[in-house]
Amino acid sequence: MLCETPSLSRRALLGVGGSMAAWAYMPRFANAADGRDPRLVTIVLRGALDGLSAVAPIGDPDYEALRASIALAKTGDNAVQMLDGFFGLHPAMPVLARLYRANQALVVHAVATNYRERSHFDGQDVLESGQPGPGRVESGWLNRALLALPKGERVAAGGGLGVGTLSPLVIRGQAPVLGWAPQAIQKADGDLAGRVLDLYRHQDPVLGEALSKGLDTNRMASESGMSGDAARPRGGPDSVEGMKQMAAGTARLLARDDGPRLAALAFDGWDTHANEGGATGRLATLLSGLDAALGIFEQSMGPAWSQTAILVVTEFGRTARINGTVGTDHGTGTVAFLAGGAVKGGRIVTDWPGLKSANLHENRDLKPTTDLRAVAKGLLADHLGLSPAVLGSTVFPDSMGVAPLKGLLG
Image 1 (cartoon, rainbow, N blue to C red):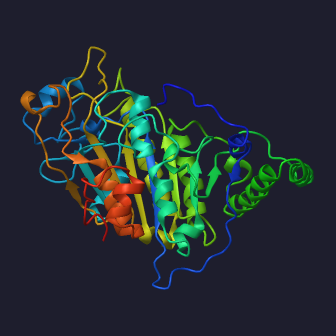
Image 2: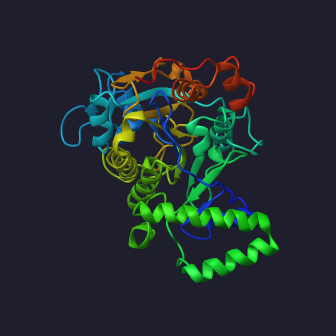
Image 3: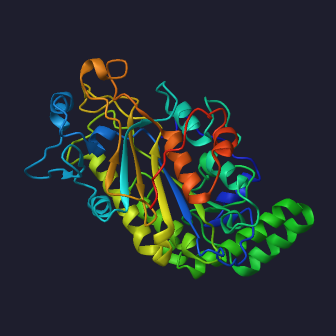
């Protein structure tokens, strides 16, 4: 969750004034000569996901005592879905379990950004900006990756898609980005839209151009079935229905021949300080929403699913021990998920640090052993063809020492 509310400039407000807005016209493009037409989606879970509950280290001898009343079990009612002999996936995620067994999903465990404090705002800043520290938020790493692609490539030409009333920071920047959100206000009829467009073309050409492009994106949404009742909000980004609706709109736009190829979504509400729950409860509900969203991507992407990779990340993890309100406090190490037809799945990627007190970060958190930037770099290198030099200097500044994680895609 965000602890502060970012302000919107007059031009940024154009992106939230209806169901759709756009900053770049999206013409039809031919597929690449080699037939590749990759899609990449980044889902940010704001509030800090408890990785030890999402993917429980059932085989660790110290797990059950640390987790106490919220510990998950290998057997019985609401048992975990064992991924191997050591790790079990939360029972609220049957879609991810199925994708894992179909070799279309993997888990990166004991992962974190390079940020080691516990502020949501700063943690999300580092996670989405890709900068070495908080405070530099001009653009996000996914937007800079888009900007670094050769101009003639289909992915670069298609631009990006930011989902929500305010596009996630990870995809904001100089590269062209569309904006989509469920329609919170009544859509203007064609006559009114035309008159407003004519006004802005004469009074503010920049806004006029953006509005014109936004209307074209509205057309794409309508043609994809995301208008009328389907576009009305079903709940916020912290609800199951809200996550499902955001996933459905994103998938339909990405699947189009004339749609964008990179997208970013943010799901809120993962700050489980109190009453987190174990196999059932608050966290289980949130995980079921994320799981349903992944299923909708699989169903709605059609043939494009085979070239799709979805990266699910969060700003940091949560404490290994539960607190006095049967929740978990801000931590460090957590999990990241990768799903999609392009993913080389069916495995856990981790250098497991163990849960003994001496092995915990500051005697309280799961110790991170994998840099999240290495995961993102590996994905961008293999899926989009970006070089280690560009990734280490431009996309993730000052990170040349962090090598891309290889072999994430099939």
